[in-house]
Length: 158
Image (cartoon, rainbow, N blue to C red; front, side):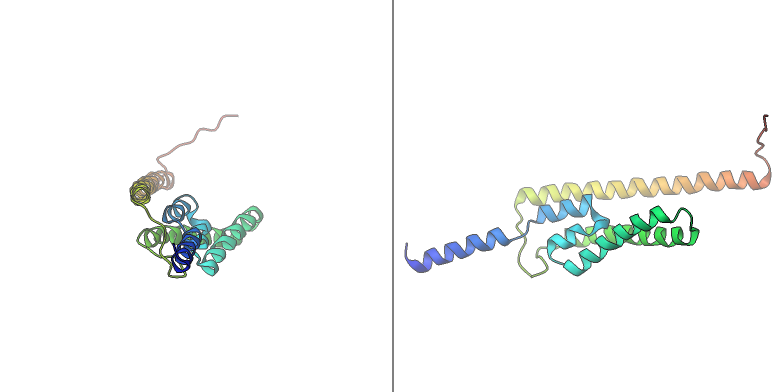
């Protein structure tokens, strides 16, 4: 083996060790979506760190907001936004083949199959959450309707 061949082999080994894994990115998106860790791993540092600090800020402000209802409303809206952003981001990352530096992600056939299983589980989970939200709305609207119509009577025992 001559010097140019060994230099190319060493360079490709270094490039492979610097490549990011598609499966690791998808696992981060699946399990820690609102935190933005998948974006940080992919190399989208400003977007990922922004989401991370917004999430931690929501946790801290959520602890304080018990005495301030307006702050609780703001924290809730930001958390909903982070959740929706995580859902959209999961679908965007599922289709990506390169990192933020335009380098190809390491992706084997096994990685693609596991990512597809995660994708299916994600869709099933979203479907279950949507059905649960609709059923919850129906239930609570019935409860509130019966409360305001006076058909529900609460007995007072002393």
